[in-house]
Length: 61
Image (tube, rainbow, N blue to C red):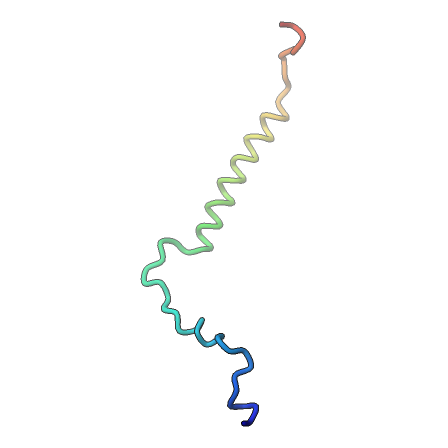
């Protein structure tokens, strides 16, 4: 048997036969951009809270 007739990686062709999803809900890139925007907003708010001067004195109570 020649080397060309035997597949080098058996089972690899199975992955190529899988049908693509008919209608993906959202582009993966768009999902990532949405998540990054939400994360950025949360981090900006947290940063603003941490940078704000605190007038409260924890020992005053």
